[in-house]
Length: 492
View (cartoon, rainbow, N blue to C red):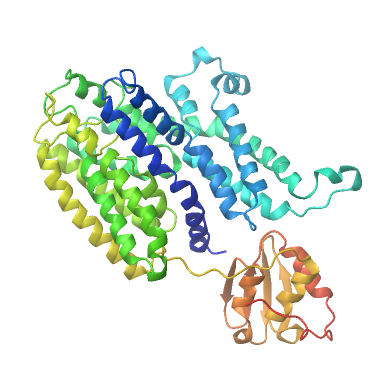
């Protein structure tokens, strides 16, 4: 499958967990509004709302592991979803546990740097969940019909998928144990380097904060700028009033125009650009996501809705975030948040001692809403980006057929032996030479299960079908040249 097509499938699979996130954000925001100082310590209702919201927002990794695996499995089988969750739990127990990391690396816990310990705590994120969802779905699609020797027959088929996923998760964990802290530490060092750059540093922080959200590494920069890793501690100092007027809060104010104005306007643009028959379906999700962002500043439901299906839009979003933080910091328009840059935090921080001209952030937000709507609408329509509601119609794939049966289907869709001068394969694709490429039934190839078709020159074609390519190619060669293919009905 071509990369954009695969990203589109990921985007569609993400819509299931994304639909859950607004509920968590709203509960957290309302709980904080009821009890802004105690977060539930002073109110039973706030306690219920806050911890109910945390049950969703703090477990995004689980939601994405299950949702992505389920959404990408060929038959949306629960075995794939269970395998995704299983793999994530393994990563969580290995990479998210400093004692286990110490045992693997031989470095005593007391000798680990604070960055390494924080990296371990931040290793299980929505990104980790998505990765395990992708892995589990791929393994399910490859092995859910596997047949083992009779003595191991119980572990064949769908029961084999959690086993192989567990092995994959262990391998991923071992890589992460060594790679993740190094990458995390490098980002921390980068954050420290730009923290002395004033407004320009705030802009760079805003850019990389958004850009790194898909991989969960934005937490590294947050530790530098808004928490207390190097003494900036922007959030705590702003709310306690112990910071410096005009300086403390510059890493927060610029987020309000993005979270409460820009991204909700992007939702409106995506809704307006959706196909008419899909507007009702996507309108509910986009509307709930926009409302959540406005009230609470929780933007993950919006960002995950387009970051994979339209990566160029996500880069634009990161650039606009950089511009917003730079403008707010330069002009010293400052408000703060304890949770995120939504209306609730804006109202609560409005009259605090270190707030400066927060009303100007409203004007800036209105300007950014116009920018976001215009840019998103133009880019979506101009480049035909597959944002929610604009996905290509899918054809039903052939399932529950043997490799020999599938080979016959592929052979007929390609025009039969008479049209094929050579049949070869690599790991994931059929490599074919044809007399006439024009008679190939591409729709049928995709319906059979092809994930992509690549034309090379006038007479060469590659059909991407996954790891069964070699087996299918061999089966195609075994079909007699004189076999009548007319009785085979191609899917449409």
